[in-house]
Image (cartoon, rainbow, N blue to C red; front, side, top):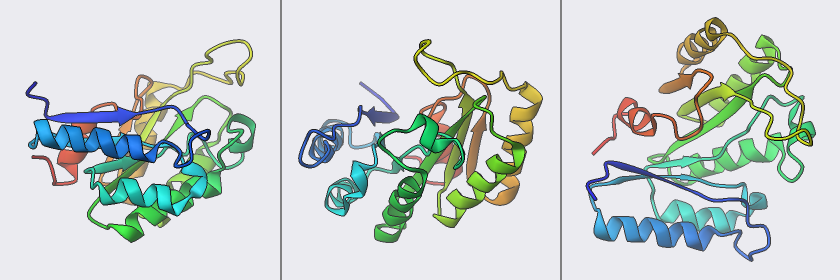
Length: 196
């Protein structure tokens, strides 16, 4: 297919013994078999912090492992009912501890009522977990049942956050309303110096 970079994602599968880790591995192996020059990124759940499941994905050696913290620490319990802010940071740190050559990536959504100071702290927390790439996008309320949108963040503020993240030390920061975790994914890898 001539793909340069693929992003493999899934919903959380806490109903499976390994949280779906083995399926990520199978997908990585198939990409490697048929497209050996294609770089691979996986967007994983936290696997409930299970190291055995995380190890399966780490050993498969995708170029990037992405796990989103989703929002700042204060708001996290209000929108993340199964995952926690602290566990997400632990997952990201564990990945880097096990294989420093794998790039780690995370992201947050804005417009949930966070402050600039809280966003800065989230960046610091992620850098302390040795995260390489950081994405920032606009939260859009999927339905009336979901967490209420607090505000649409200005383009100027997204720019402020991008500069802040780069100055703090991330290798790549994508920050604008349309950004999602896979936005310009291959550019992040190139910024890290590891594109094929």
